Amino acid sequence: MREPEDVDEDLARWRRATEGVGPRAGFADRIAERAMGGTGSLADALGAMGRLALAGGLAAAVVTGLLAMREARNVTGELLFLDRAGAMP
Amino acid sequence: MGRDGDDFRALVQANAPRLYRTALRLLANGADAEDVVQETFTRAYGAFSSGAFRGEAQAGTYLYRIVVNASLNRLKSRQRWWRWLRTPLDEAAPEVPVAPMDAEARVALREMAERLDRLPAEQRAAIVLTQVEGLSNAEAAAALGCSEGAVEQRLIRARAALRRGDQDERA
Image (cartoon, rainbow over all chains, first blue to last red; front, side):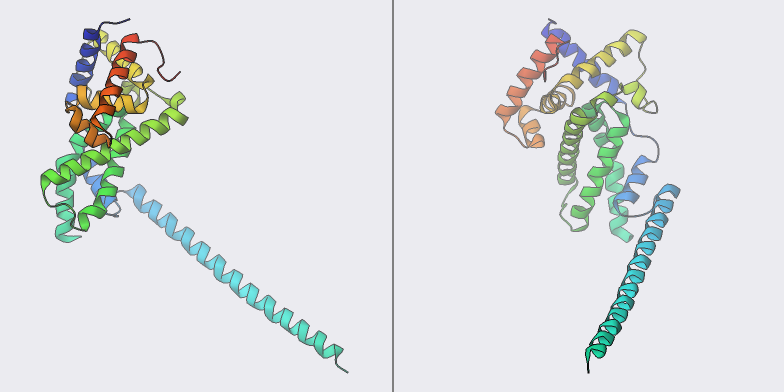
């Protein structure tokens, strides 16, 4: 069991050791840009380009899927029509 | 971004070092402290751009509360899931200019970080805010969003656990 004064001294040491500590140079500029939605670094720019490419790819996949569905529906419609036509006397 | 952008940059420049230090004292990890400060300003930008800040003092208090709560959440999640990844202050953030100290003091500091890390997040926040940051119990209660009585209870338990030293309070 440690004495209360030891705990006080530990906490005071923790305070002193962190007194002059600050973030790395340029940190404030970087986080201001990021918070405002800007692209603060090359990594950010590349990340944004990657997301754009992904979004473009997804959009293209959706359009292709819709076209394929439309085509399939047309084909199905034709088949149904032919079936119906075939059933007609 | 215009004038708003310049004003926001000035707000970040004026407050980031202080908020980073608070987060570092709570988390004892430079990388986590940077993440928390970034999260704080990202959340604050919406309020700033809508004109919710009417003065520097109001902005400072608002930002302080966000950084304390974000640090508390980070502590809880780290203690819950990532405790085994915990690294001491001087290993986790070698770029952080820790004040020069002799080997004995460095060991004592590391031991203190480990003792703090054994405390439940709320107790750790209460003791760091009052004993290290120098807030009154009422100010700490406001920052933590709890009653003054709750802060006093957490301080009593935290001090008892720190005196016991080697016992895990959450065990």
